[in-house]
Amino acid sequence: MRILELRGVSKRFGGLLAVKDVSFHIDGNEIVGLIGPNGAGKTTIFNLISGVYRPDTGDIFVLDRPVTGLPPHRIAHLGVARTHQVVRPLQELTVLENAMVGASFGRHQHRLGKAHEIAEEALKKVGLERKADSLAGSLNMAEKKRLEVARALAAEPRLLLLDEVLAGLNPTEVQEMVEVIRSLRREDLAILIIEHVMTAIMSLSDRIIVLDQGKVIAEGSPQEVAEDPAVQEAYLGDPQMAAAFLSGEGE
Ligand SMILES: Nc1ncnc2c1ncn2[C@@H]1O[C@H](COP(=O)(O)OP(=O)(O)OP(=O)(O)O)[C@@H](O)[C@H]1O
Ligand SMILES: [Mg+2]
Image (cartoon, rainbow, N blue to C red; front, side):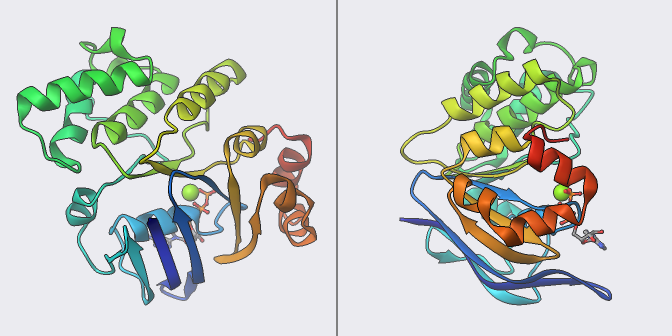
């Protein structure tokens, strides 16, 4: 089944065309990387898929159903869950309660008892179960990133959108998070992952889509996109990203 399809999607912010005629699709249980220099339009694409923004042109389909213009909660109910680039847990709630929010407002909108159960499972999947009763505000950055993933997982998504869940983590934490993401691979879940940490995205992804200035400039296996001259040029325009790309270190 086609989990996600974008057809000719564009989004303008005032004078800036942030996303230009973007088309791609995700099938089955793929893990697809979405990469590109800063400002390429990656997060905007997540905001379009999840209904935060409505595209100016084009159409978006989730599980073969048109979702263009639907509000975020309706899209969440179809099984789309996301993490945010800037983590923002509900600081005054516990870790478990934060994950329960995902279960309550996700695909099945569980009542408290069931939400509790699902949230506990999600915390286990990301290795946060021992922090369940801590206040979310007391977590360090790596733990907050895990909590973002747990909250999204508790929504029991068919499509999981991960926005830079490795950013700001040290190499050990990156490795741990990569293992968590790898462990999520299952029959009925597709993952679209935005990431600047190149070694990680290259090793995790079945396929990579490269954006530059709002446009898809390449799509293919990790090997294919790494060797693509257009991709190398896009990154070379940005010295910091080029260094990251070529060294495989990421930000
Ligand atoms: N709400 C908004 N209003 C105005 N401009 C916006 C808005 N959101 C994004 N933009 C602009 O759209 C462009 C794409 O932004 P976006 O956040 O999608 O990039 P990105 O690829 O996620 O970058 P990064 O790697 O830095 O996170 C940028 O020029 C950004 O400044
Ligand atoms: Mg972004």
